Image 1: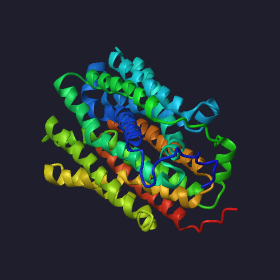
Image 2 (image 1 turned 90 degrees about the horizontal axis):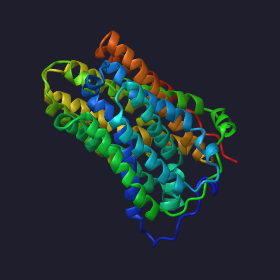
Image 3 (image 1 turned 30 degrees about the vertical axis):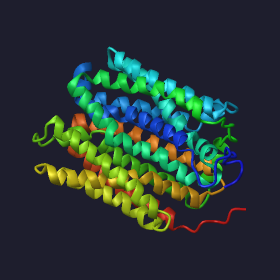
Image 4 (image 1 turned 180 degrees about the horizontal axis):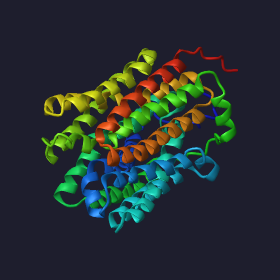
Length: 399
């Protein structure tokens, strides 16, 4: 890793990580991801409250990801010299304001506009997270530091989205949006107090991204990542209608299943994170194939809550580790362009989410949720083939 990729870290005691600061970053990632996928858990109530179809309500995820897709490669160009701590504080306020506005929105159009702020904040956070973590944890401990932000993602699926479902049942879906937004705004205070000054890193602009994409194996890996993410989210965005398909599950059981998905993700982060470097090629193809198998299981075991629980646990276990697997790929394929690689990963995830929510919504309304899951299986298998092909290509020496 070059000095331009990771600013120097603050002085800390040998062997110690600044856990309080990293924990704050973890809770910020938790709040952002909870807000991003909160519509997945409250889709039915939100559609009813806004007077729209579930597929139309699912476009609240589409617009968030689409804005993020635009912001990922441009955030450095928009704020080339702004201290990243200041930017973190600003994005926490922007994301929180989005939640409050979403809670107050009287119709779908205004709700979609409120989600624009959230999409920009999420993408900005992930695009610069490697720079912030390197400053907080130290350039030689980036991997351990990024485990905290990754844990925030899994924690959101364990607690954030299921809690949103509970709130929508007990109070109102709007209360869920408002509460998450208010808590995100509050996080701006510890971010300002605990995160050290983080000078802006050299920008990974379009020219650098184009140069990286021309390297052997990079384009197929990027496209493979898009297919894997697309296959996952074309199913997960509409997970609640899928679980309700058999008519045997009540809201409480769905909350439990969503929590099981997230719990599987927490375990997957730890287990796969411990061995991903040594077993990278195995996971490169095995992870998306396993997710595809889990989607087939969700379609075929609707009569058994236990079998559904096992299926969603495996699904969560594997997909939560996918970001780790892709980051290992970035570290191996482009070690001298980590920030550019990180931007490509963000672009891949946001592209997949945008396409999944949009295409998935059309399929849900016109054909039914089964079509979403079958399409997800096909996309995951294609993604596995592309990403595995990239992983097998020899890595050129970096001069």
